[in-house]
Image 1: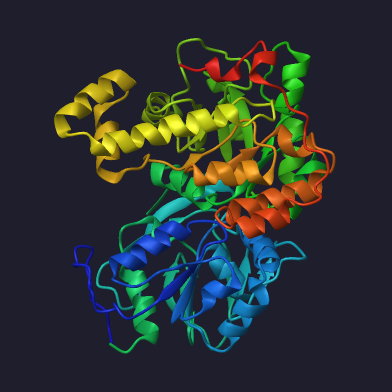
Image 2 (image 1 turned 90 degrees about the horizontal axis):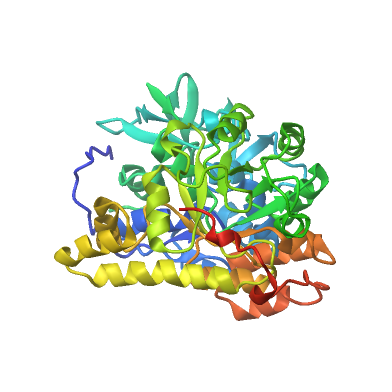
Length: 208
Length: 292
Protein backbone atom coordinates (compact mmCIF):
# COMPACT_ATOMS: atom_id res chain seq x y z
CA UNK A 1 0.00 0.00 0.00
CA UNK A 2 1.58 3.34 -0.95
CA UNK A 3 2.15 5.81 1.84
CA UNK A 4 1.30 9.42 1.23
CA UNK A 5 2.00 11.26 4.44
CA UNK A 6 3.19 14.81 4.85
CA UNK A 7 5.26 16.23 7.70
CA UNK A 8 2.12 17.54 9.29
CA UNK A 9 0.30 14.21 9.35
CA UNK A 10 -1.25 13.56 12.75
CA UNK A 11 0.21 10.78 14.90
CA UNK A 12 -1.75 7.63 14.36
CA UNK A 13 -2.83 5.13 16.95
CA UNK A 14 -3.26 2.35 14.40
CA UNK A 15 -0.20 0.46 15.63
CA UNK A 16 -1.19 0.20 19.29
CA UNK A 17 -0.93 -3.57 19.40
CA UNK A 18 2.62 -3.63 18.00
CA UNK A 19 5.86 -3.91 19.97
CA UNK A 20 9.03 -2.75 18.24
CA UNK A 21 12.15 -3.10 20.40
CA UNK A 22 15.06 -0.68 20.11
CA UNK A 23 18.57 -2.05 20.59
CA UNK A 24 19.88 0.17 23.41
CA UNK A 25 23.50 -0.87 23.87
CA UNK A 26 24.79 2.50 22.66
CA UNK A 27 23.84 5.34 20.30
CA UNK A 28 20.67 7.19 19.33
CA UNK A 29 18.26 4.60 20.75
CA UNK A 30 16.21 7.06 22.84
CA UNK A 31 15.29 9.11 19.74
CA UNK A 32 14.17 5.99 17.85
CA UNK A 33 12.03 5.09 20.86
CA UNK A 34 10.42 8.57 20.77
CA UNK A 35 9.62 8.29 17.05
CA UNK A 36 8.04 4.86 17.50
CA UNK A 37 6.04 6.00 20.51
CA UNK A 38 4.78 8.98 18.48
CA UNK A 39 3.26 6.41 16.13
CA UNK A 40 1.55 4.68 19.03
CA UNK A 41 3.90 1.68 19.05
CA UNK A 42 5.21 0.02 22.21
CA UNK A 43 8.99 0.54 22.02
CA UNK A 44 10.91 -1.20 24.83
CA UNK A 45 14.70 -0.85 25.04
CA UNK A 46 16.70 -4.01 24.41
CA UNK A 47 19.92 -4.56 26.39
CA UNK A 48 19.90 -8.26 27.30
CA UNK A 49 18.57 -11.48 25.70
CA UNK A 50 15.51 -11.40 28.02
CA UNK A 51 14.46 -8.09 26.46
CA UNK A 52 13.90 -9.84 23.11
CA UNK A 53 10.74 -11.61 24.22
CA UNK A 54 7.45 -10.58 22.61
CA UNK A 55 8.94 -8.30 19.96
CA UNK A 56 7.21 -7.91 16.58
CA UNK A 57 10.27 -6.14 15.16
CA UNK A 58 13.48 -4.40 16.21
CA UNK A 59 15.37 -1.20 15.39
CA UNK A 60 19.17 -1.18 15.31
CA UNK A 61 20.07 2.50 15.87
CA UNK A 62 22.98 4.67 14.85
CA UNK A 63 26.02 4.96 17.08
CA UNK A 64 29.49 3.44 16.87
CA UNK A 65 29.31 0.07 15.13
CA UNK A 66 32.55 -1.15 16.75
CA UNK A 67 31.17 -0.37 20.21
CA UNK A 68 27.85 -2.07 19.46
CA UNK A 69 29.59 -5.10 18.02
CA UNK A 70 31.58 -5.44 21.29
CA UNK A 71 28.52 -5.01 23.48
CA UNK A 72 26.47 -7.45 21.41
CA UNK A 73 29.08 -10.07 22.28
CA UNK A 74 29.47 -9.25 26.00
CA UNK A 75 25.71 -8.93 26.60
CA UNK A 76 25.04 -12.36 25.11
CA UNK A 77 22.72 -10.75 22.57
CA UNK A 78 24.70 -11.54 19.44
CA UNK A 79 23.74 -15.19 19.05
CA UNK A 80 20.18 -14.90 20.36
CA UNK A 81 19.32 -11.79 18.36
CA UNK A 82 21.14 -13.21 15.33
CA UNK A 83 18.91 -16.30 15.48
CA UNK A 84 15.72 -14.20 15.81
CA UNK A 85 16.78 -12.09 12.83
CA UNK A 86 17.67 -15.17 10.79
CA UNK A 87 14.20 -16.51 11.63
CA UNK A 88 12.69 -13.40 10.06
CA UNK A 89 12.25 -10.82 12.85
CA UNK A 90 11.71 -7.56 10.89
CA UNK A 91 14.55 -5.08 11.42
CA UNK A 92 15.22 -1.41 10.66
CA UNK A 93 18.94 -0.59 10.76
CA UNK A 94 20.11 3.01 10.59
CA UNK A 95 23.77 4.01 10.02
CA UNK A 96 25.66 1.74 12.44
CA UNK A 97 22.55 -0.47 12.35
CA UNK A 98 22.92 -0.67 8.56
CA UNK A 99 26.52 -1.80 9.02
CA UNK A 100 25.33 -4.56 11.38
CA UNK A 101 22.86 -5.78 8.69
CA UNK A 102 25.22 -5.69 5.69
CA UNK A 103 26.71 -8.83 4.16
CA UNK A 104 30.07 -7.16 3.66
CA UNK A 105 31.75 -4.30 5.57
CA UNK A 106 34.83 -2.51 4.27
CA UNK A 107 37.18 -0.46 6.44
CA UNK A 108 35.70 -2.02 9.55
CA UNK A 109 37.73 -3.83 12.17
CA UNK A 110 38.71 -7.42 11.44
CA UNK A 111 36.91 -8.65 14.57
CA UNK A 112 33.72 -6.72 13.81
CA UNK A 113 30.77 -9.10 13.42
CA UNK A 114 27.41 -8.49 11.81
CA UNK A 115 24.13 -10.28 11.08
CA UNK A 116 24.52 -10.67 7.29
CA UNK A 117 20.85 -9.90 6.52
CA UNK A 118 21.15 -7.85 3.35
CA UNK A 119 23.20 -8.52 0.24
CA UNK A 120 25.04 -5.19 0.13
CA UNK A 121 28.60 -4.01 0.66
CA UNK A 122 29.18 -0.89 2.73
CA UNK A 123 32.26 1.16 3.55
CA UNK A 124 32.32 2.41 7.15
CA UNK A 125 32.53 6.21 7.36
CA UNK A 126 32.50 6.06 3.55
CA UNK A 127 31.22 9.64 3.29
CA UNK A 128 34.23 10.81 5.33
CA UNK A 129 34.94 12.17 8.79
CA UNK A 130 32.65 14.49 10.77
CA UNK A 131 33.59 17.57 8.69
CA UNK A 132 32.07 15.78 5.68
CA UNK A 133 28.86 14.92 7.57
CA UNK A 134 25.87 16.68 5.98
CA UNK A 135 22.13 17.11 5.70
CA UNK A 136 20.17 16.84 2.45
CA UNK A 137 16.67 16.22 1.09
CA UNK A 138 16.21 12.69 -0.21
CA UNK A 139 13.45 11.46 -2.57
CA UNK A 140 11.98 8.25 -1.17
CA UNK A 141 9.87 5.75 -3.14
CA UNK A 142 6.28 6.05 -1.92
CA UNK A 143 6.68 9.43 -0.18
CA UNK A 144 4.98 12.49 -1.70
CA UNK A 145 7.52 14.93 -0.27
CA UNK A 146 11.30 14.49 0.17
CA UNK A 147 12.68 13.30 3.50
CA UNK A 148 15.18 15.60 5.19
CA UNK A 149 18.09 13.30 6.04
CA UNK A 150 21.13 13.73 8.31
CA UNK A 151 24.24 11.78 7.33
CA UNK A 152 26.71 11.54 10.24
CA UNK A 153 30.02 9.82 9.39
CA UNK A 154 27.70 7.70 7.31
CA UNK A 155 28.37 4.31 5.73
CA UNK A 156 28.57 4.33 1.91
CA UNK A 157 26.89 1.56 -0.09
CA UNK A 158 29.32 0.29 -2.72
CA UNK A 159 27.43 -2.78 -3.99
CA UNK A 160 23.75 -3.75 -4.08
CA UNK A 161 22.83 -7.42 -4.61
CA UNK A 162 20.05 -8.64 -6.92
CA UNK A 163 17.37 -9.25 -4.30
CA UNK A 164 17.70 -5.78 -2.74
CA UNK A 165 15.18 -3.02 -3.44
CA UNK A 166 16.53 0.56 -3.46
CA UNK A 167 14.01 2.95 -1.86
CA UNK A 168 16.14 6.08 -2.05
CA UNK A 169 19.31 7.27 -3.72
CA UNK A 170 21.49 10.31 -3.25
CA UNK A 171 23.89 11.35 -6.02
CA UNK A 172 23.60 7.90 -7.57
CA UNK A 173 24.28 5.91 -4.37
CA UNK A 174 21.68 3.88 -2.51
CA UNK A 175 20.89 5.34 0.94
CA UNK A 176 17.63 3.52 1.83
CA UNK A 177 17.18 -0.15 0.94
CA UNK A 178 15.00 -3.14 1.68
CA UNK A 179 15.40 -6.90 1.36
CA UNK A 180 12.51 -8.95 2.72
CA UNK A 181 12.04 -7.98 6.40
CA UNK A 182 15.20 -5.92 6.57
CA UNK A 183 15.16 -2.14 5.91
CA UNK A 184 18.34 -0.08 6.22
CA UNK A 185 19.22 3.62 5.98
CA UNK A 186 22.67 5.21 5.69
CA UNK A 187 21.25 8.29 7.41
CA UNK A 188 19.37 9.04 10.65
CA UNK A 189 15.57 9.29 10.41
CA UNK A 190 15.47 9.43 14.23
CA UNK A 191 17.23 12.84 14.27
CA UNK A 192 14.21 14.66 12.83
CA UNK A 193 10.58 14.72 14.01
CA UNK A 194 9.47 13.17 10.71
CA UNK A 195 8.16 9.66 11.41
CA UNK A 196 7.38 8.68 7.82
CA UNK A 197 10.28 6.22 7.46
CA UNK A 198 9.37 4.52 10.73
CA UNK A 199 5.86 4.17 9.28
CA UNK A 200 7.22 2.67 6.05
CA UNK A 201 9.13 0.15 8.15
CA UNK A 202 6.11 -0.74 10.29
CA UNK A 203 3.87 -1.01 7.23
CA UNK A 204 6.40 -3.40 5.66
CA UNK A 205 5.57 -6.13 8.19
CA UNK A 206 2.18 -5.24 9.72
CA UNK A 207 -1.14 -5.73 7.96
CA UNK A 208 -3.34 -2.87 9.08
CA UNK B 1 21.60 20.49 -2.15
CA UNK B 2 23.49 19.23 0.84
CA UNK B 3 24.99 21.29 3.65
CA UNK B 4 27.86 20.48 6.00
CA UNK B 5 28.81 21.95 9.37
CA UNK B 6 25.23 22.87 10.35
CA UNK B 7 24.15 22.77 13.96
CA UNK B 8 21.94 19.66 13.48
CA UNK B 9 24.89 17.88 11.85
CA UNK B 10 27.15 18.82 14.75
CA UNK B 11 24.63 17.80 17.40
CA UNK B 12 23.98 14.61 15.40
CA UNK B 13 27.46 13.28 16.15
CA UNK B 14 26.94 14.01 19.86
CA UNK B 15 23.68 12.03 19.68
CA UNK B 16 25.57 9.06 18.22
CA UNK B 17 27.94 9.02 21.20
CA UNK B 18 25.15 8.58 23.75
CA UNK B 19 25.36 5.60 26.05
CA UNK B 20 29.09 5.40 25.39
CA UNK B 21 32.50 6.08 26.89
CA UNK B 22 34.98 8.64 25.55
CA UNK B 23 38.50 7.82 26.68
CA UNK B 24 41.61 10.03 27.06
CA UNK B 25 44.60 8.56 25.22
CA UNK B 26 48.15 9.86 24.80
CA UNK B 27 49.52 7.35 22.25
CA UNK B 28 48.28 5.44 19.20
CA UNK B 29 48.73 2.25 21.21
CA UNK B 30 46.40 3.49 23.96
CA UNK B 31 43.91 4.60 21.31
CA UNK B 32 43.81 1.04 19.97
CA UNK B 33 43.26 -0.34 23.47
CA UNK B 34 40.39 2.12 23.91
CA UNK B 35 38.81 1.16 20.58
CA UNK B 36 39.23 -2.56 21.35
CA UNK B 37 37.47 -1.99 24.67
CA UNK B 38 34.48 -0.39 22.93
CA UNK B 39 35.09 3.35 23.36
CA UNK B 40 32.75 5.50 21.20
CA UNK B 41 35.54 8.06 20.73
CA UNK B 42 39.01 8.90 21.96
CA UNK B 43 40.33 12.21 23.26
CA UNK B 44 43.86 12.66 21.90
CA UNK B 45 46.13 14.60 24.23
CA UNK B 46 49.79 14.74 25.22
CA UNK B 47 49.30 14.24 28.93
CA UNK B 48 46.30 12.94 30.85
CA UNK B 49 44.91 15.47 33.38
CA UNK B 50 46.57 13.66 36.33
CA UNK B 51 49.97 14.34 34.75
CA UNK B 52 49.10 17.93 33.80
CA UNK B 53 48.18 18.44 37.45
CA UNK B 54 51.47 16.88 38.62
CA UNK B 55 53.69 18.74 36.14
CA UNK B 56 52.13 22.19 36.51
CA UNK B 57 53.13 24.90 34.02
CA UNK B 58 51.09 25.87 30.97
CA UNK B 59 49.07 23.12 29.28
CA UNK B 60 48.31 23.68 25.57
CA UNK B 61 46.82 22.00 22.51
CA UNK B 62 48.63 18.76 21.60
CA UNK B 63 51.20 18.43 18.83
CA UNK B 64 49.39 17.88 15.48
CA UNK B 65 51.72 14.98 14.76
CA UNK B 66 50.50 12.98 17.75
CA UNK B 67 46.87 13.81 16.94
CA UNK B 68 47.39 12.57 13.38
CA UNK B 69 49.05 9.42 14.68
CA UNK B 70 45.99 8.67 16.80
CA UNK B 71 43.60 9.50 13.94
CA UNK B 72 45.44 6.98 11.76
CA UNK B 73 45.34 4.29 14.45
CA UNK B 74 41.55 4.05 15.01
CA UNK B 75 38.28 4.13 13.06
CA UNK B 76 36.19 5.76 15.82
CA UNK B 77 35.84 9.57 16.16
CA UNK B 78 38.85 11.47 17.48
CA UNK B 79 38.47 14.48 19.77
CA UNK B 80 41.16 16.92 20.88
CA UNK B 81 41.36 19.78 23.38
CA UNK B 82 41.96 23.50 22.93
CA UNK B 83 42.48 26.14 25.59
CA UNK B 84 39.42 28.17 26.61
CA UNK B 85 39.16 31.10 24.19
CA UNK B 86 42.04 29.94 21.96
CA UNK B 87 40.24 30.04 18.63
CA UNK B 88 43.46 29.61 16.64
CA UNK B 89 44.16 26.27 18.28
CA UNK B 90 40.59 25.40 17.23
CA UNK B 91 41.29 26.51 13.65
CA UNK B 92 44.31 24.21 13.63
CA UNK B 93 42.32 21.23 14.98
CA UNK B 94 39.62 21.84 12.36
CA UNK B 95 42.33 21.88 9.67
CA UNK B 96 43.54 18.53 11.08
CA UNK B 97 39.96 17.24 10.62
CA UNK B 98 39.43 16.09 14.18
CA UNK B 99 35.81 15.03 14.71
CA UNK B 100 35.09 17.03 17.90
CA UNK B 101 36.87 19.83 19.79
CA UNK B 102 36.83 20.06 23.59
CA UNK B 103 37.24 23.68 24.73
CA UNK B 104 38.68 22.50 28.00
CA UNK B 105 39.41 23.91 31.44
CA UNK B 106 42.04 21.16 31.84
CA UNK B 107 44.32 23.23 29.59
CA UNK B 108 45.49 26.66 30.73
CA UNK B 109 42.94 29.29 29.63
CA UNK B 110 44.02 31.64 26.82
CA UNK B 111 41.27 34.23 27.41
CA UNK B 112 39.91 35.30 30.77
CA UNK B 113 36.65 36.76 29.47
CA UNK B 114 35.68 35.05 26.22
CA UNK B 115 35.00 31.52 25.12
CA UNK B 116 35.34 30.59 21.45
CA UNK B 117 32.51 31.54 19.05
CA UNK B 118 31.74 27.93 18.19
CA UNK B 119 29.20 28.81 15.48
CA UNK B 120 32.16 30.04 13.43
CA UNK B 121 33.39 26.45 13.04
CA UNK B 122 32.16 23.43 11.06
CA UNK B 123 33.55 20.97 13.58
CA UNK B 124 31.37 20.39 16.67
CA UNK B 125 32.49 21.51 20.15
CA UNK B 126 31.98 20.13 23.64
CA UNK B 127 32.37 22.42 26.65
CA UNK B 128 32.48 21.83 30.39
CA UNK B 129 29.98 23.26 32.87
CA UNK B 130 29.60 23.26 36.64
CA UNK B 131 26.00 24.51 36.62
CA UNK B 132 23.08 25.17 34.29
CA UNK B 133 23.94 28.83 33.66
CA UNK B 134 27.39 27.90 32.41
CA UNK B 135 25.92 25.11 30.27
CA UNK B 136 23.42 27.48 28.63
CA UNK B 137 26.06 30.14 27.99
CA UNK B 138 28.18 27.52 26.21
CA UNK B 139 25.16 26.37 24.17
CA UNK B 140 24.44 29.98 23.24
CA UNK B 141 28.02 30.15 21.90
CA UNK B 142 27.39 27.07 19.74
CA UNK B 143 28.46 24.05 21.82
CA UNK B 144 26.93 20.83 20.43
CA UNK B 145 27.55 18.87 23.63
CA UNK B 146 27.87 19.78 27.32
CA UNK B 147 29.84 17.79 29.87
CA UNK B 148 30.16 18.30 33.59
CA UNK B 149 33.60 19.62 34.49
CA UNK B 150 34.03 17.53 37.58
CA UNK B 151 37.63 17.80 38.74
CA UNK B 152 39.85 16.24 36.10
CA UNK B 153 42.91 14.22 37.07
CA UNK B 154 41.78 13.50 40.62
CA UNK B 155 40.10 10.11 40.26
CA UNK B 156 37.53 11.60 42.65
CA UNK B 157 33.96 11.62 41.42
CA UNK B 158 32.59 14.05 44.02
CA UNK B 159 32.82 17.21 41.89
CA UNK B 160 31.27 15.55 38.84
CA UNK B 161 28.36 14.47 41.04
CA UNK B 162 27.99 18.02 42.36
CA UNK B 163 27.91 19.46 38.82
CA UNK B 164 25.50 16.84 37.45
CA UNK B 165 23.13 17.35 40.37
CA UNK B 166 23.33 21.12 40.00
CA UNK B 167 22.52 21.00 36.26
CA UNK B 168 19.76 18.38 36.38
CA UNK B 169 18.32 19.84 39.62
CA UNK B 170 17.88 23.28 38.07
CA UNK B 171 16.39 21.71 34.92
CA UNK B 172 13.79 19.98 37.09
CA UNK B 173 13.02 23.20 38.98
CA UNK B 174 12.62 25.15 35.72
CA UNK B 175 10.02 22.67 34.47
CA UNK B 176 7.99 23.55 37.59
CA UNK B 177 8.29 27.32 37.08
CA UNK B 178 5.52 29.44 35.56
CA UNK B 179 6.19 31.65 32.55
CA UNK B 180 6.80 34.80 34.63
CA UNK B 181 9.38 33.00 36.78
CA UNK B 182 11.39 32.03 33.70
CA UNK B 183 12.56 35.67 33.32
CA UNK B 184 13.98 35.48 36.85
CA UNK B 185 15.63 32.15 36.07
CA UNK B 186 17.27 33.59 32.93
CA UNK B 187 18.53 36.58 34.92
CA UNK B 188 19.90 34.49 37.78
CA UNK B 189 21.49 31.92 35.48
CA UNK B 190 22.93 34.70 33.27
CA UNK B 191 21.60 32.71 30.35
CA UNK B 192 19.51 33.59 27.26
CA UNK B 193 15.76 33.54 27.98
CA UNK B 194 14.81 31.43 24.90
CA UNK B 195 17.10 28.63 26.07
CA UNK B 196 15.52 28.73 29.54
CA UNK B 197 12.03 28.68 27.99
CA UNK B 198 12.98 25.71 25.84
CA UNK B 199 14.09 23.78 28.94
CA UNK B 200 10.77 24.62 30.63
CA UNK B 201 9.03 23.03 27.65
CA UNK B 202 11.20 19.96 27.04
CA UNK B 203 12.72 19.25 30.48
CA UNK B 204 16.09 18.70 28.79
CA UNK B 205 19.18 20.57 27.68
CA UNK B 206 19.17 21.43 23.97
CA UNK B 207 22.24 19.24 23.40
CA UNK B 208 23.41 15.94 24.92
CA UNK B 209 24.66 16.15 28.53
CA UNK B 210 27.67 13.96 29.31
CA UNK B 211 29.56 13.50 32.58
CA UNK B 212 33.30 14.05 33.01
CA UNK B 213 35.94 14.77 35.62
CA UNK B 214 37.19 12.21 38.13
CA UNK B 215 35.48 9.00 37.01
CA UNK B 216 37.67 5.97 37.72
CA UNK B 217 35.52 2.84 38.15
CA UNK B 218 32.59 1.07 36.45
CA UNK B 219 30.45 2.10 39.42
CA UNK B 220 31.44 5.76 38.90
CA UNK B 221 30.27 5.53 35.26
CA UNK B 222 26.95 3.95 36.26
CA UNK B 223 26.49 6.58 38.99
CA UNK B 224 26.94 9.35 36.41
CA UNK B 225 24.40 7.68 34.11
CA UNK B 226 21.85 7.20 36.89
CA UNK B 227 22.27 10.89 37.77
CA UNK B 228 21.15 11.78 34.24
CA UNK B 229 24.32 11.78 32.15
CA UNK B 230 23.84 10.46 28.62
CA UNK B 231 27.47 9.28 28.26
CA UNK B 232 30.72 9.50 30.19
CA UNK B 233 34.25 10.75 29.63
CA UNK B 234 37.00 8.86 31.43
CA UNK B 235 40.34 10.62 31.44
CA UNK B 236 43.15 9.59 33.76
CA UNK B 237 40.96 6.87 35.30
CA UNK B 238 41.79 4.23 32.70
CA UNK B 239 45.42 4.64 31.73
CA UNK B 240 46.52 5.65 35.25
CA UNK B 241 45.12 2.38 36.63
CA UNK B 242 47.07 -0.85 37.12
CA UNK B 243 45.50 -2.74 34.21
CA UNK B 244 43.88 -0.37 31.66
CA UNK B 245 42.38 -2.77 29.06
CA UNK B 246 40.00 -4.77 31.30
CA UNK B 247 39.05 -1.63 33.24
CA UNK B 248 38.21 0.19 29.99
CA UNK B 249 36.03 -2.71 28.85
CA UNK B 250 34.29 -2.92 32.23
CA UNK B 251 33.51 0.82 32.20
CA UNK B 252 32.00 0.44 28.71
CA UNK B 253 29.74 -2.38 29.91
CA UNK B 254 28.80 -0.48 33.07
CA UNK B 255 27.77 2.55 31.01
CA UNK B 256 25.41 0.46 28.87
CA UNK B 257 23.98 -1.63 31.72
CA UNK B 258 24.00 1.24 34.24
CA UNK B 259 20.71 0.22 35.85
CA UNK B 260 21.51 -3.49 36.21
CA UNK B 261 23.32 -4.03 39.54
CA UNK B 262 24.00 -7.70 38.75
CA UNK B 263 25.90 -6.81 35.61
CA UNK B 264 27.68 -3.97 37.46
CA UNK B 265 28.77 -6.43 40.17
CA UNK B 266 30.04 -8.84 37.53
CA UNK B 267 32.07 -6.31 35.54
CA UNK B 268 33.53 -4.65 38.67
CA UNK B 269 35.34 -7.83 39.73
CA UNK B 270 39.12 -8.31 39.59
CA UNK B 271 40.07 -5.13 37.78
CA UNK B 272 43.25 -4.49 39.79
CA UNK B 273 44.06 -1.22 41.50
CA UNK B 274 42.28 1.90 40.22
CA UNK B 275 44.18 5.19 40.00
CA UNK B 276 45.05 6.35 43.50
CA UNK B 277 43.20 9.63 43.26
CA UNK B 278 43.34 12.72 45.44
CA UNK B 279 40.96 14.46 47.81
CA UNK B 280 39.63 17.93 47.04
CA UNK B 281 41.42 19.36 50.10
CA UNK B 282 44.76 18.12 48.72
CA UNK B 283 44.70 20.10 45.48
CA UNK B 284 45.68 23.71 45.02
CA UNK B 285 44.31 24.31 41.51
CA UNK B 286 40.67 23.63 40.76
CA UNK B 287 40.28 23.34 36.98
CA UNK B 288 36.51 23.68 37.37
CA UNK B 289 36.98 27.34 38.36
CA UNK B 290 38.28 28.07 34.86
CA UNK B 291 35.63 29.25 32.39
CA UNK B 292 33.16 32.11 32.55
